[in-house]
Length: 229
Image (cartoon, rainbow, N blue to C red; front, side):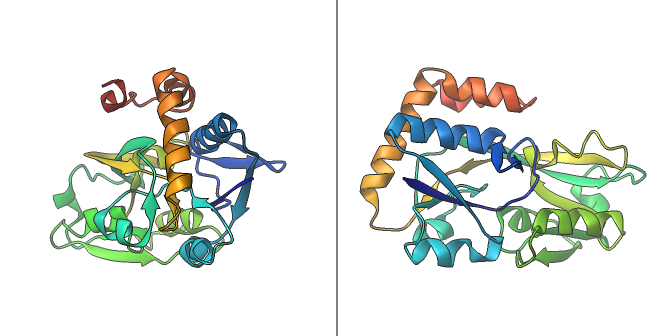
């Protein structure tokens, strides 16, 4: 049994849940990896802020919930090879006219606390920032609600996270930054055998094009060329 941690959010097309079944890019990749490993897959839903303590307690095998691989995080977690590479975007209200970082001078941008998205926004000079700490039941909705209520002027997140919102006339993307952050499955240090097995399964589904089929089914953004090397 593989026990993977994620948040029970509607972040289409990345992931969402209906009638206790998970859909979207990450759940499909996770299920395919589990199938290759000959394991059943169980999702454990937690608040964002509870991910690390729960994993490090040994009560789950891994986190698979939009975790970008960074040097700082690699000190805390053991990562699989990347299963995705994503750019980062800024979501704004449709009536606003922000098109570049400089347009947000003296404006407030929201992002998840200590995320790669917040780190990116903090590079833009003279912006104000609001960090969402992930202690709510739905941190993504919390950010979007703050945007709707004009508590903030933009939300910084990974490009595909906004896919389900762009059909809503309230929103649009201001711009996208080509950061190509690698996403990986985060495990507890010392679990190298699990890392090896996950990597082997991931390499197989990339080589036989199942990975690209899942990508193309869920995203309108181009399949990363790095997977075709």
